[in-house]
Image 1 (cartoon, each protein chain N blue to C red):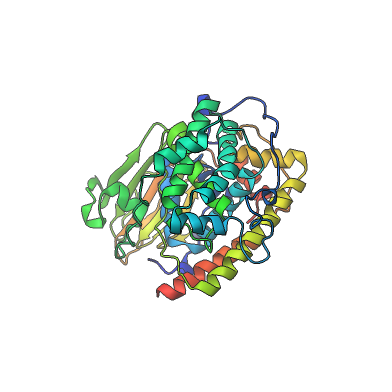
Image 2 (image 1 turned 60 degrees about the vertical axis):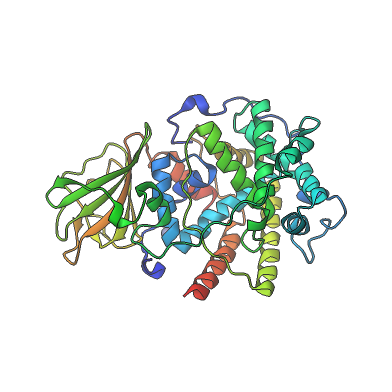
Length: 217
Length: 213
Ligand SMILES: [Zn+2]
C-alpha cells in the first residue's frame, strides 16, 4: 500500500457522510472504499460517522410483534458461527474492494485501449454512475476530459498532474463540471487510476458545505 | 440527499414521533450494563453470545436493538412489515457474527448500525456496498480493554451531545442518516464531539499499522 503519510488529497466530508449513511451510488462507493483501504485518516473519519450512526440508532424504537425473538432464535439456533473472513491477500496495486469488481488483481484486468497510451476497464456501471480503471502510459495525457457531473479519481499507481495539482498513490482528485482538467501521467511510469463519474452528481451543491459545517472533522 | 437520483425510494413523510427515546443506559437485563465504569455497554452479552451461544444474552440484545433497528428502517422509509423482517435479519447476523465483534474497534451500537445500514442498502436501495480492506485488528487484551472503554465513553458523549442539539440541527443530522436530505438547508457548526472520536480511532489505526509492519 502507498505510504499513508504521503497521501495529500483526501475524501470530502460529503462523500464520507454519504458513504456512511448508505446514500452513495455504488460506483462512488468503490472509489471511497478503495481510498479508505489506503488512508487511515479518512478511514478514521469514516468510522466516526458510523459511531454517529450508532448514537442515532439509540434514539428511536418501534415495538416488534410478539414472537419476533422466538422466530429469530428458531432461525439461528441450529446455525454455527459465520466463517471468519480470510486475512487480506498479499498486497496488490488494487485494494480489496477493487479486486472484488475485477475478479482478481491487476493481472486480471481486461483493458480496452482508448488510444494515445490510455486504456480503460469498466468495473461497474448502473443508472447512477460508472466506475472504471484507467491506465495512462508514462507521459501520456488523458484525452479530452470534459464531464458534465462529478468525478472522483483515485491514483493506485504512478502519478498524474493537471491544472489542480499533482496526484500520487492514494491521492483522490474530486472534480465537478467547473473543473476543466487534463491529467498527464508523470514520465516515471504508467499511472493507474480508479475513476468514478456521474453526470448528475453535483458536489458543489449544498452537501459539502452542509456536511463541512455540521460535522467538520 | 444531494445524490437524489431515485426520489421514489426516499422517505418523504413526516418524522414519526419518538416512541421510545431513551438513553442506552436504561436497558439491561441484569444490571451489568447499568454502569460503564469498567466495561463497555453490552460487552458481557456479546462475549456470552460469542463464547456460549447464550440465548438469554441474545434475548437482552434483541430486546434493546431489534426495536431500534426497526425504527431506523421505518424512518428510512420502509414499511413496518419489511422493517420488522429486516430487524430480525440484522439480529440473526449479530448472532452469526458475534465472534467477529471487536469491542476495541467499535461499540456494539456502532456495529449494529453498520449491519442495519448495509441491509438497508441491500434491500431498499438495491445495491451493494463495497467495504474497505479488512484490517486484522490486534488482540492485546489490556490495550484493547482500555480502547474499548474509551471509545464507549466518547460514543456516549456523542450520544449526549446529540440529544442537546437544537431541534433543527438534530433533525438535519437524522435526515442525513435516514436518506432524506433533500432540502437546501444550511446548518451552523453543531459542536458534536466528532473530532475526539476520530482522533481515538485514528490512534488505534496507527497502533495497528505499527504492529502489522
Ligand atoms: Zn484520505
